[in-house]
Amino acid sequence: MELEAISGAATVALASTVVFMLVAKTWLLLSRTLGAQPSFADRIMHEAAQRFRDELDNISSRQSAYLSGALVFATLFAAAYILQAKNLFSGYPSWQLYLQLGFLGLVMLYAGYCLIRTAFNRRQVAFVRDANIAIGHQLQQISAQGTRVFHDVSTTAGVVDHVIVSRRGVYAINVVARRSRQRASVESQQNHLHFQNGSEDESIVAIVAKSGRLQKELREVLGHKIRVRSVIAVPGWDVNEQGSDHHLLVNERNIGMITGWNDNSDHLMNEDVDLLNKELTTRCARG
Picture (cartoon, rainbow, N blue to C red):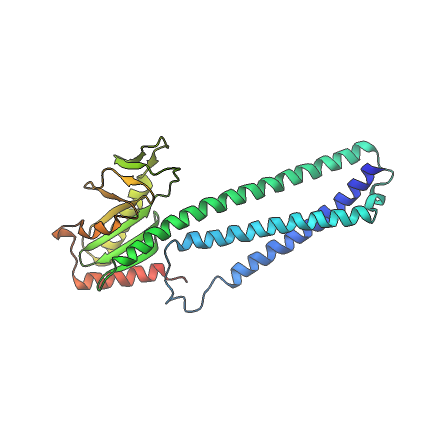
């Protein structure tokens, strides 16, 4: 009976695929665990968009595992069908065979959903990574003697994408990555960004919280007040209103102007710069 042949082949293929996926997932976990501590961790710093690079690598690994599982299933199904695995289900009533096929169908639908979701997540993370790299490379161009740029700086309120430390002051740059089919403009309105192409507004409450927390933590390091200028970078968008008392809005083309956004109260002593560089170096070490 054809139904028995399909059920037997599918069962053999599914069982083998489950074992394969367990082995693959275990290997990925062991690889991440054993390779989690890089050599010279105290000397290797975060690169621009480092956390998004790492996340993209993890997504790519999961995607490869899912695709390999699909290939294993298809190969074993064909082999089991040719080798007449139908004998596994010979004599079973038809309703049980249909139930088995229904279960296999649900498993295949879920696997397809995982593949599509993984592909979508990979595309989105790749876009955010590229946006952060674009801003990071521009920040490197304004680095000079006495000025340092740190990437992926952790705080208790979240991760700040980029931080600049110089005698002129400290700047916390957070990147908002938003797609647009054509170049449009963006402006800051109170606690959100307004995109003038009809896209949904973006709240900046979390960004403000991260910059504020970084300011508080750096004050504790220095033992006196310090101002951290909040900069919001929106790559690929034209900026209508660039600045306010609370944050500066820039894109990848005009981000160099942040070095002029300060006053005398923002300036730091050489000792303060050295302490901040040491603290941020510790936070951004790959280890």
